[in-house]
Length: 146
Image (cartoon, rainbow, N blue to C red; front, side):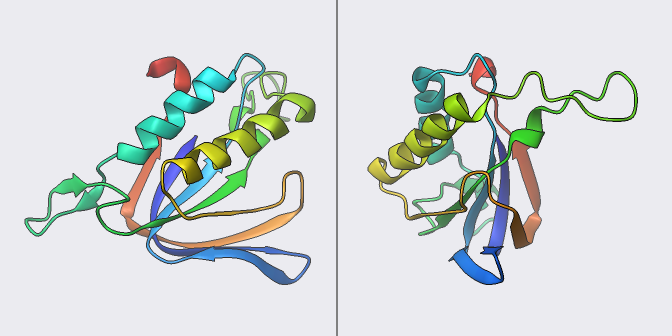
């Protein structure tokens, strides 16, 4: 999972804006062959309380809920590209669609159940994502490290 703190973000599909947010997180959501619903739950809960917004003293001390932020979640299997050999990435570690699509949908549902407004791309679609990274702040969050 790649988390980008943004001032705004949007996803366009087939020339139309499909989802957009103001202040919040742009999530690039990828899953591996070994990820489970429990892994997805851990990431959703960690992300929900992650304090990476600045308080009045300029310290990263506030969570998404503290600032009334939103989430734009984009599925992205290319996060798990293997570039160790040759010049063309391999995607052996990325979960196949029959595994990753249900995990992506469950992840977004869990975020909503935690009280967040979540906009989404379309799983497997060709998407154009625009964002204004705030900071910039970009964080990688992996379930096997929680």
